[in-house]
Length: 294
Image (cartoon, rainbow, N blue to C red; front, side):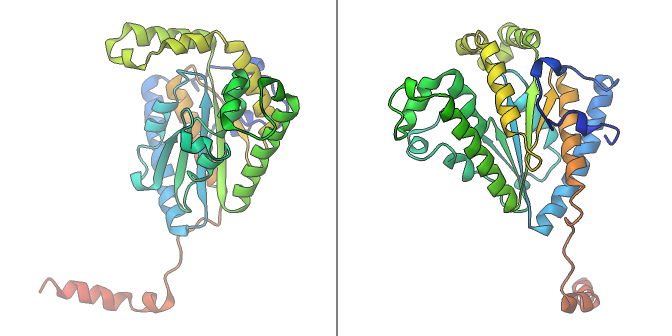
């Protein structure tokens, strides 16, 4: 969707979430949005084929958002046209005992994309300055030297984390990983409606957890933490995009369009030239295969 101005969704300076819209439809009905997504996703799939052949970049797509923001369905719909072998999805939940025996970035580092592939993080390394900031007691499970109580988790601690995350992202960008960070910006009322649907529709009951309501009561705290994390870590090499998420179909089109428009700017991503010797013998190889019909 080339007429989308992606600059208006990218965070290039201080931003307030309360000033950002949670809804957009581009003036299109659901059927048209679905058609648009298919077209953009097919172009994205074609680019991924070339990216794989080129073999120098990996693409990291980070998705963050409140519960019910639509992360799972966005992943399913945006990437379903791509070669399944070229996309790996990682859903980061509560750290395991193995993961807690490493630093908090370790499990994300080992999930980074291979060159030529996409990795999608469904929840990301930013959980370490979001959920843990709302619930600082979780940090104690990391066994960090000098952090023996919640009182040790002060503002200087969070500033170090933001610096560490920025350093991590700069390091991987300088070594060939292209980063796209999307915050699915959902309104509190839309979340209420989606949670109600989980309760009302039998096929969605399994998605509901009483913990969803407990976290919902902390909505304002989460908004403050998201806003601070986005402002501290949106950089030219690893920008945040704030995606209006009340309309799921439009949000999917927007994410796919941002990816496609941004990736097309990498003009060096081209299919490699054939070796001269192979190129000069193409006709011979063709004749050899055609003879098999005889």
